[in-house]
Image 1 (cartoon, rainbow, N blue to C red):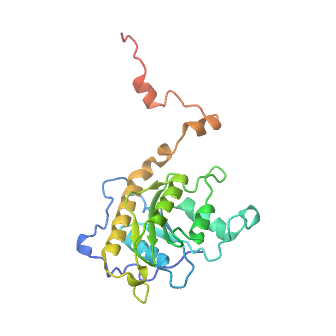
Image 2 (cartoon, helix red, strand yellow; image 1 turned 45 degrees about the horizontal axis):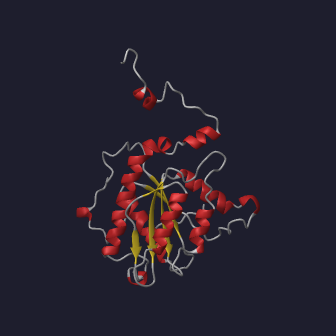
Image 3 (cartoon, rainbow, N blue to C red; image 1 turned 90 degrees about the horizontal axis):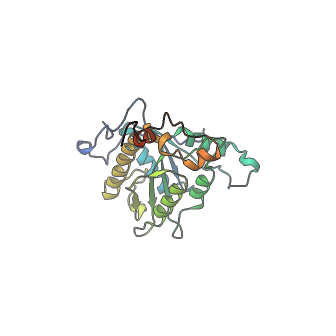
Length: 251
């Protein structure tokens, strides 16, 4: 499988446990299974700060009770390069997307934008795939790393893409400036306000994922799609129509 194994998944030296909830979504929805989060990063460098960032995010998410997968895009072809998208990496990426209930996207900012690797992964996720929508209704957290001063170009683009993919992008986000200063030689993030922000973002992602997932099917149901599929609304089951219908004997 094209999934990265995160070392020391339970080792969080930069986290102050005295202030961290183990179950930040308690009371927001049923916890019959762990929230399933897919994490994507946008660089193939051996010393990739976007990968280091999602690995830290995965550790934090696991601490918060989530189940995580980090997709490795190292052999992913370019969009439209393989006829019919018949490539094992494309198939696996889509399977992980369908498995997920939420996602984290983290891209380096390169030339003021997200990287081609990041965009290629998103472009390989179709809006509709055999009646299954791999992204629709899922939550999304966006992050970026920069080599220089802090910027928000990449996260702003990721927000646009998340909206286009019909995802619920959470309000909080992370932008790590001068990323080369924020990680040690082992790729672990140092304690800082940037690390604290990633904790904030993952905490919020877990909360929104638990809050929305019982209602995801209803939240993404659309008039236009019902009409296209010729699926009329059942008036006996439409509670909103029943509520506003005139009552017998009413003046």
